[in-house]
Image (cartoon, rainbow, N blue to C red; front, side, top):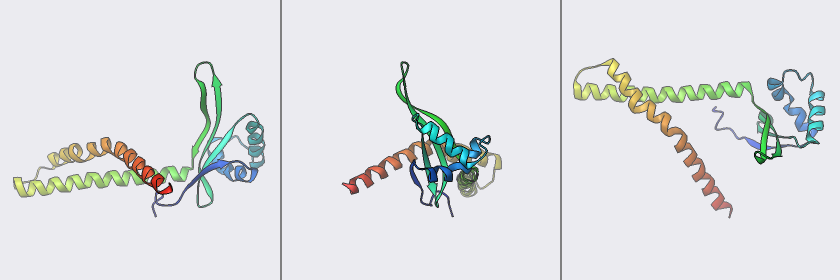
Length: 166
């Protein structure tokens, strides 16, 4: 099953039990942390100074974690400073694999379309040209348009769901 299709929850980590649950994930980023108890103790100390944790939970376990604090100085005024940012190693590799599969599908579609065009119109086959056309007409537009279209779709869906909530 795709990781993207599974339900995820993003919420602050505010109690010691939740902090302890985040220790294996934080250990991937900070291997010098010896134990869960040490992590909880350090969190408690830093939380008194404004440090906060936010986790992305999937299936009852954290898969991404951010440690941050709100600071204020003369240069930037009030701003958010991210101390720790980590994603579970297994999640990173699975997302990379999904991206590679999606990219391969786009290239394959471009190759098939140009192959069909060459067979029907040109009555011959030029493999080098087929690869160039697939890259220029399928892969590059995919790379250029994927980000903006995804942002527009997210904005539109958020707007649509906010309209239902009202």
